[in-house]
Image 1 (cartoon, helix red, strand yellow):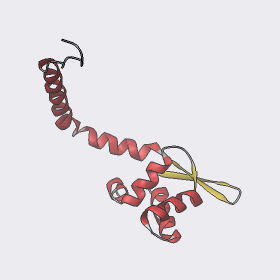
Image 2: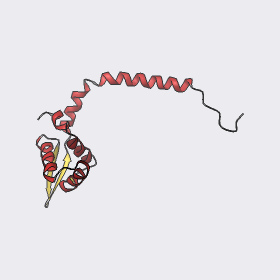
Image 3: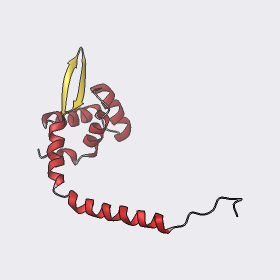
Image 4: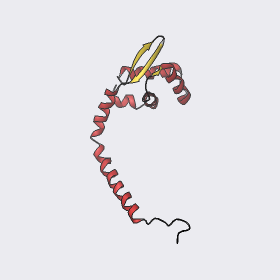
Length: 116
């Protein structure tokens, strides 16, 4: 499965967001995803499997618990692909920053109340 196919699903993106804070148990992920998306435990498990099978997460056993964490490499590959397009918005954001700075200089600061 292509990285953007994996990341195209909002449930899988949300699972990755949850994992940015660190390792989480399958149970806590399932609980949060079920409450936010209203999908079943088997549905959440399927999303976890897709993330794991495509290298976006890893899982380790701790007793009876399964702990998931983010794997950075597939995300680096996505970032490298997106890097080709950054020039399109970086230039525009730089221009916006310049215009905002000009606007701040051109707009006089109103006097404080009680000041003549």
